[in-house]
Image 1 (cartoon, rainbow, N blue to C red):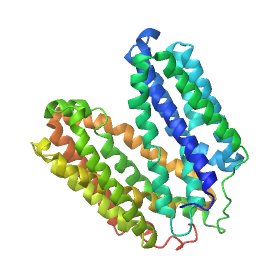
Image 2 (cartoon, one colour):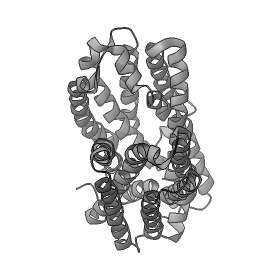
Image 3 (cartoon, rainbow, N blue to C red):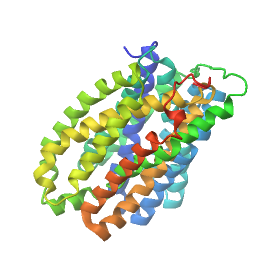
Image 4 (cartoon, rainbow, N blue to C red):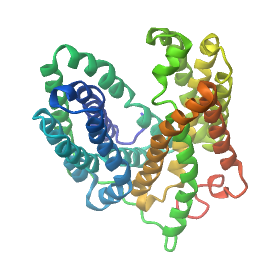
Length: 390
């Protein structure tokens, strides 16, 4: 087991999975199908969904700080209660203005969940297993997100009442889990005198790369179906490449995580970024459909190594006395990169086609790699105990 208190950590991960299932199911699957019946157009739907994600992204740092002050359990219970209110309120079919307000309030309550889970995962990780514990915490939620899209969506189309009941029940279970951990607090860590601002300066060195690393995959968020149409492929044609990518990820994540824990996270992060850059660069020339089976495992290996190295590096750099707030700050910047990516991806597609989008993604990953290798980034290369902040 990766954590010293596995029951506590597994309870938090279960809360995260239930919450992401509900959020993805409601915002991605249920509301888009229910919108016409509610009299909502695409603009109104975009307002509701955007209000939630914007509030969540902007509040991650402040809510992470609040979780450290008031107790993680209390803040998570409040967020789960707001989520249940949002699901029940959406079922009552409010107008889009009230829907956007409720979604934004839910986003504010939700903002502490990811920083809190990652902070607790780092704090409870067994010595020498921090990078692997953080990487596993980051990817464990993937089945819940897929279920929200691929499970709740068809259920909403076939049996809407069952879909709404499923979301309400899952969020109710999340609230019960949160209430069960109401007294949960992040382990306290006292920073040495005079080190607080130095620790936050180290966090600041992460932010440009955090932005770039989510910008690159964000380029393709609105372009999946146009790309498949351009290549003459359907979703079923991605099954084989998807399995190969998953296999590559399953191999790369534990191997890179072990390397990140035993040596330094940059030993995993650097090769991961280079593999991602290479994959995007090889996807840029015409005839991508003939190279999918080759590029898929490279993508999985690169992402597995990147994820292990990135989480391990963030864990080393964050100041222990403000860990949840620092995780929230990094995640907020990642969210901004992911939000800007679709805009740049659409513009690049219009100007240079899909090859231009892949080339831009490769360039972003190369720039991120160069940022870590730049001599001025000594704070990201040295020992985590070098200045007493981590």
